[in-house]
Image (cartoon, rainbow, N blue to C red; front, side, top):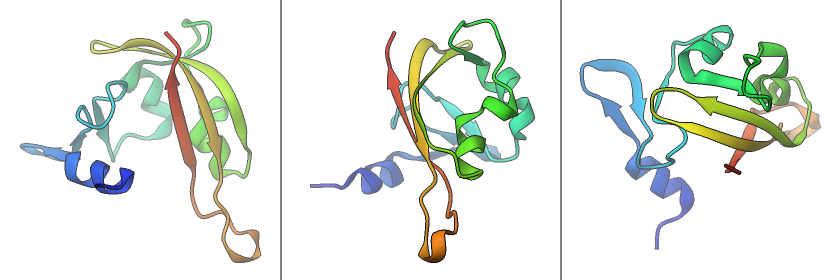
Amino acid sequence: MRTPAGRINSDLRKVPGRPNRYDLSRVTPLLVVVERDVRAEAWPETYGLYLGDGKTPLSVENNPICRALKGEALVQMELCIKNRVVNAAIEVTAAPPRGAGGAILGATVLLRDVT
């Protein structure tokens, strides 16, 4: 039996010839390719991320990952992913895991397809 983390690690593949690209298509159908070197400001254009209305690009200020990294917890935020591979409505729940003394360690983000 594999743990979810083990499944992600075994299914995560680098894109040949692109050292900063990872193919997540075996992990989740919502995000096909993630690039490490894409700045958060470029995510809406690069990945087709929009607010729940499907028209307003997702700004850095509204990005669940950025908000969690600043210490905010979000529950069931509605977003849309519309790109050449995916057209989906999603709910996002995000929170900052904290270490000793309350220091933010990163961001935990869960996506649920509600299309």
